[in-house]
Length: 429
Image (cartoon, rainbow, N blue to C red; front, side):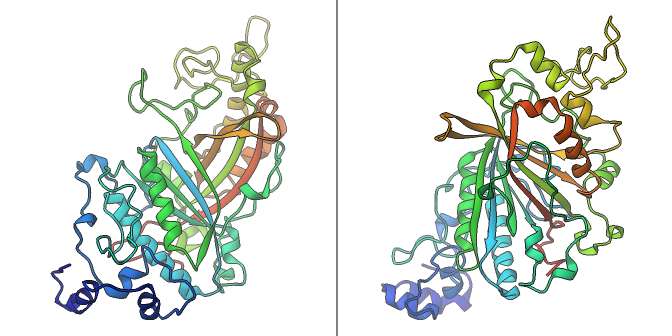
């Protein structure tokens, strides 16, 4: 194994020799406690780099999304086809360990966004590869990796309680909640999106591998959505109820609107969050068997939209304005007042940015029914003023509640973007 870096020649000469497991443990300074072989450990020990396996897959620039920037990618980025979401719990009480983890995650994420293999050693027969390898040769598939921290991150462990944003609140109980602990919370939330599920899984798998000894997975959820097929590219995706999901989203190209709706500002009271956003994640199970027995008329009245076009009831086109004052020939509102669109829209003054994905987790063995639904994800500048009042209204009156149940919930403060040479969370840490 060779390298262009002369300072690493000594390390390379070591790597050329057979190394026993005991030697690895001794060199790592951990005795028999179990070396964290993987993306952050072995490469750091030897400082070797340059294997042919680490060469990125050839891909056009249109297939890559830059990891570094003013804002984290994966928030206003056009939604990709697949999602892999993971919540982590920290197992360390050391703030220095958290910094090391975030730095390692930053380096790995920047590489994976380019379609490169991560780590320093991937071609030495005497060492475990730093990269798990299942994405080798695949295109980057527009992979984005978005990081946030939950309310529990600011408990007494790391001395950060005074830096907890006022907008990072624990969500109150909502109507329709049947929350289960295994789908709730987390010290850290990581949203990975890609146009290839294998690359998305690869990212979470390797982040979990890097985290060993510092953090463990709390829960994960895969998701999918497609906008291809007969619909033009970029069309609004459909949820598992057959209706378009996200029609009312604000225009992400309107910078002033995004500053108002999505991006935290320095004047909001938490300067380190400027350029970041608050993410709400809700695992919403759909009672698909019940929904499938309802008439099309009932389904459209529940959403307040026509299923085929996505248009508000009484209109023709998906993006026609929602006119709640329209009446039928009997004087009744065309769009029911308890329909999902009527309640979610309200007077139009409260907006959020939805980035939801459908999920299917097989069969619920307790009921023999599908465990399928929507992993609702939204971003907002202040959850107290945007998501919470909207969800309180929906939880009380939404006709959709007959067909859904919220069994998972989490909130995260998603960091501002990372500059090259920096790392995720460096404005906080």
